[in-house]
Image 1 (cartoon, rainbow, N blue to C red):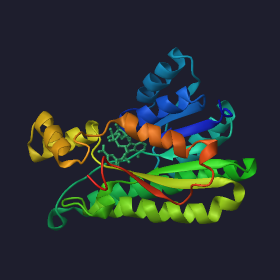
Image 2 (cartoon, rainbow, N blue to C red; image 1 turned 135 degrees about the vertical axis):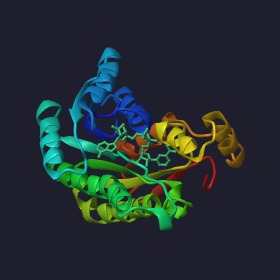
Image 3 (cartoon, rainbow, N blue to C red; image 1 turned 180 degrees about the vertical axis):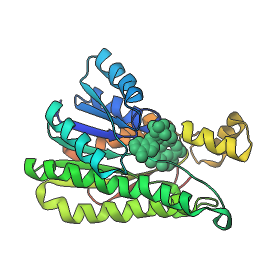
Image 4 (spheres, protein in one colour; image 1 turned 30 degrees about the vertical axis):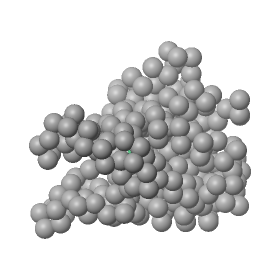
Length: 251
Ligand code: NAP
C-alpha cells in the first residue's frame, strides 16, 4: 500500500464526492468529508470509520473564503496536512441563455470556479510545504457545449484552464493537477435534470445508456476509480490532463 495521506473531498456528502471519499479511504488515506451541511458529512464520515477508515466531517461552503480557510485549517490540525484535494462540489442552474437570471450565472461560477480556486489556494500552502500534492478537479463533458447549460459549461471549461495552470505553477513543488470530465453519471444531479425536463428518471437513464458507446450510464464509482489513480503516487508524471470518463469520447 502507498503512503497514507490526508485527502480533502468537497461536495462529499453524496453522489460522486461520496464515492470518491469512500474510495480514498479504501486506498488507505485519511479523508476529510466537506460539504455544506456538516451533519450530512458526518453520515459519510461515520460510514468510513465504521468500515475501519479515518474520516473527519467538516461543514464548509466552498465559495466562502473564511469558511474555506477555517475548514482547511481544521483538517490540517485534526487529520494532517491535506496533500490530496478533490474539487468536486457543484450545482446546476440550467436554463436557456435568454431566460437565465444573472443570479444563476453567478451561483454556478461561484461554487465551481471560485470554490475550486479558494480550496486549492488554501490546500496548496500545505502541499508546497510538504513538497507533494495531487489535485483533481471535476469538469464535465458539458465543457464541450450543452444546450441549456451556458453557465455550467462555461464553468466546467474554466475548470480545465484552471487545472492546466495549476499543473504549470505547482509542478516544481511535486504537485500534479488533473481534471476528470464525467459524462452521464447516475446521481441526484442527473435525477434533478430529469425532473426539470419532466422525464421519469428510469426513461432518462435508458435513453442516456443507449446514446453512450458502452451502452450504460456511469456510476459514481467509475469516477472514484479514475480519481484514485490520478491521486496516487504512481501518477506523478500525469499532470495538466483532462480525462473524459464518459463511456466514449463524450456522452
Ligand atoms: P450532487 O449529487 O448534486 O452532489 C454535489 C454535492 O456538492 C452536494 O452534496 C452539494 O451539497 C455539494 N455542494 C453544492 N454547493 C456547495 C458549496 N457551495 N460548498 C460545498 N458543497 C457544495 O452532484 P454529483 O452528480 O455528485 O456531481 C459532483 C461533481 O461532478 C459536480 O462538480 C458536477 O458538476 C460534476 N459532474 C457530474 C456529472 C453527473 O452526471 N452527475 C457529470 C459531469 C460532472 P447540497 O446537497 O447541500 O446541495
